[in-house]
Image (cartoon, rainbow, N blue to C red; front, side, top):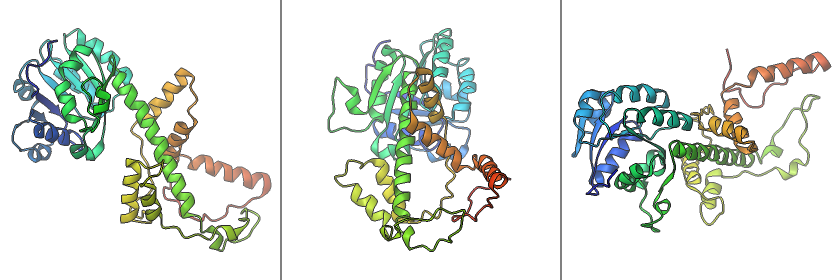
Length: 347
């Protein structure tokens, strides 16, 4: 595939949610033009800006794109296959289909093979940057044929962050990287998200230790079912978590963008009272754990972080009830009242 004769390209974007819409805005800001499709009229209306053509059907969407067409999907993983099936009947040979969402890398390998029978090119892009990507840019982990990835360089360069260490030869310094053949981009993103689970979990546990450092001041009812705290005099601290998060942001080895976001949350709501503690997972952590098992690689931190998310949703409640039942039957141990309220009661 020949390189574009110009650095400005036309990109078709399917899916205008939190990231897709912002990516369109960033591309337009960088001088590209976009054709967009979403089944939500409100999402289309929000992108009524210059150099953006909105479409209400996929047929119209495809007809508005110049060949070779570049179609970028930013949609939930469960919708990708059906969308590809429809597009494969509308697109022309040499058109390019990009999945920038969180699909499983094994699906990428199979989809690329199938699309080759239609002479369509497929690229998988692990996209990181979240809602701040419009201003900061997106980290892009790319899988696919090298010639196709090279052809798309102007798009990737515009979406990626502006770097003080710009390199014309090492795109990783610019925030995007061709990681390998089909599936490689989403494989790297899968591991990226597994690491993210572990880091987030470590921050959460550390701040919980700080928050509970005043336990020596609390009157805890003494009974046979409750292990007493020893050396209560050493747990008399009242820490300001927002201030600690703030000081860690400056010169600390654990400073990070995640810590910046954590500091912001604690400053606005020190007790995090607006959050229930119900923590979802979108799949990448599970897939990373499965890959580690297949590779026989121990990943105790990632697996513990994933299981903790399951636990946050009340999924361990029955096993905990079973433990209480066994303790009662084997030793007559009555359940004590919980110190903290149970947030998620399974009906």
